Image 1 (cartoon, rainbow, N blue to C red):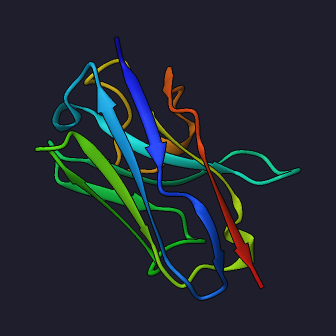
Image 2: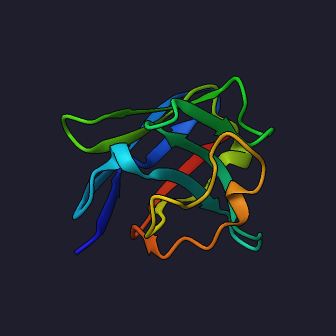
Image 3: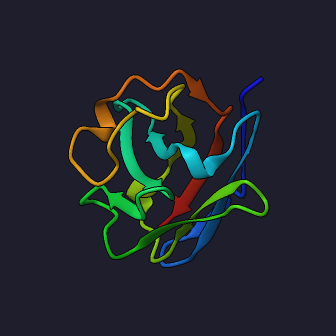
Length: 130
C-alpha cells in the first residue's frame, strides 16, 4: 500500500526556516517523481516543487525559487523540502504527492503541477507570522 506521511510543519516568524519531510512507504522514491503542493486558505492548490531521483531533476514554482530546496534520502525513502526566508504568504497546508506510474510527470518540464497525482499525504500546516 502506497503511503505518504508529511511532518515538520509549524509556526515560524517571517524570515525563518522549516524543513518538511515526506516519508514514503509501499514504493521506492528512486523510481518516481515526488511533488510538494500547498493550499492556502481561500486559494487554489499550488505546485511548489518536484524531484526525480532517476533523472536527477528538480523544479520549483517561481514563488519559492531561491528560498526552497527539495532533496531526498533514499536510505530513508524520504523527500524533504527545506524552506528558508519564509514569508507570510507561504502560510498553507503542505502536501506531498506521488504518481502511480514510473511514467508519470516529467519533473524537469512544465506541467508537473497539473498532473493528476493519485497518492497524497495528509498534509502539514505551515504558518508564517509577520
